[in-house]
Amino acid sequence: MSTIILQSCYLGPVSYYSALLNAEKALLEVNDHYGKQTYRNRCRIATANKVMDLTIPVERTHEKTAMKDIAISYDEDWQKTHWNAIESAYRTSAYFDYYADELQVFYKTKERYLVDLNMKLHELVVKWMQLEDRIQLTSTTEYHTPGESEIDLRTAFNPKSAANKTKPYYQVFSQRHGFIADLSVLDLVLNEGPEAYKYL
Image (tube, rainbow, N blue to C red):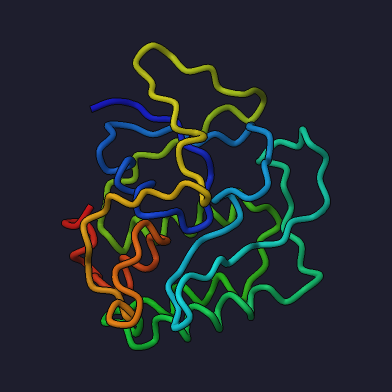
């Protein structure tokens, strides 16, 4: 058991939550520089047409903008797009009806900052899986320097190199596509419900 350091994720991948469950404590970095094409503002779900990336648009930033200062853009109705995609992909899953109302709230209200939306969605997922939430935020004034007993996983989870050594679980479109590894934790929870904890 150890302390891990993670980046903020939008409904992070299954591997992210597996790492979290296997750690004694987790620190969530909020002062790292925001990078494009990461899980910070995107998640991956399984749809009838295979894998779909859901990306939250953010307001224009410069290269060294801290994650805690990244504001969400509402110039386009991404919330409607994301919710419609989630509903279409998972409405026939075993647990969609149990969790849909709580989840849909986040696609009707407008959070200002990406890190706040990510954290609130994380708290919802943790509640659904009845996990002890091990995450604490790092300092909001400087980038966290790992201590001797801390494992730095801030760059470990990336959509371009998703984990593929994952034990299969039931997925809505598995008969069409086969099992797709390391999708958003949302895929795991909506398909497995309370059993998601045991799976992790």
